[in-house]
Length: 150
Image 1 (spheres, rainbow, N blue to C red):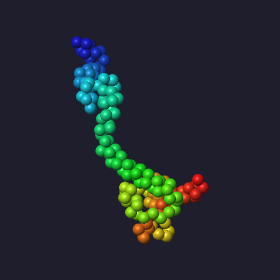
Image 2: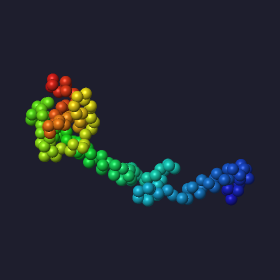
Image 3: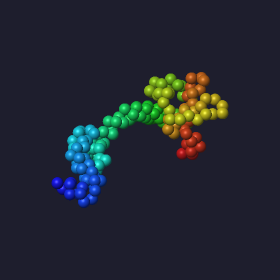
Image 4: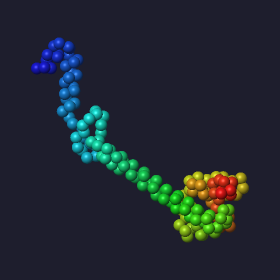
């Protein structure tokens, strides 16, 4: 009956708006993760922060797992290069087999730097290596000048 009074006084548009809002309130929104009712803002999708975080973590888990495994290989490669540099010093030739037996993965590197002569230098973060034709590896730091003065 109240709707008819608003309809008669203000026009049909106001009556339509009040009916629309009352219909919206009767259909509760549910959380995308746990399906509990969601209260609050109209654009809210989750019932709380833990559901929101868990939903997005599950959504990105496949990508994150791939990145985690690649970073594991890169950290391992850098750790092996760092250990050899600490034992033998900079700019030493090491047999490639030594790196392979240590678990070094030659397919994983962060970037490479082309050289005017010879093979490019492949880097694992700040430590690099250059594959020589003789089956040896030449290990070099990213910034050779800074490494010499440490």
